[in-house]
Length: 231
Image (cartoon, rainbow, N blue to C red; front, side, top):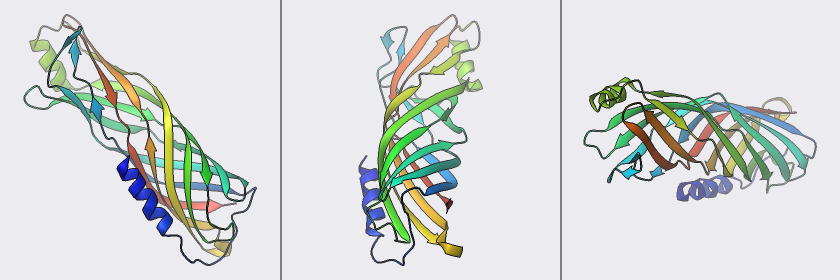
């Protein structure tokens, strides 16, 4: 969260003096670019069939994908944004069992709706903005790594393990800035960052061994840089 506020401060400081062009009520803005989800992971210790495995925790790697956003300007200074993306893929590890165990991977989609505030005048060609809203994260296509299944087999597993992650609903906040260019200043370069409150329960069912569970807070920062067009 501290990283988010630092990014928001830098974004607003970019909006000093600027040439003029309109961001008026009724405008629509489409943005797209490379997006990276960088989790700030905090997890409970893993529990095997109710018995806590002290010292263990879950780690989740960054994931990148195509990010897309669409904005409708409700009125001058205020917009409603929908955030979408192609699926993000994240590798998942377990730490605290000696060597780090590559547990598996998951994909997710993070549809998010935010109310945005644009503090500059609608005519400004440099448009910083802040947003607050709600994120829904859907996890799918979870897979167990082969090395993890080998470990489970050595513990007596009778079949391959299965990983599942609960979907999440939470708050989201953002900061971004547009720099317009081109004919009639309709094209723009965009840089943006979101903070998302994503909590999930991870479950690994290991036939013949038991069920492994952990509560995981992902709470990522999501960075995107790309181009946009204003209608």
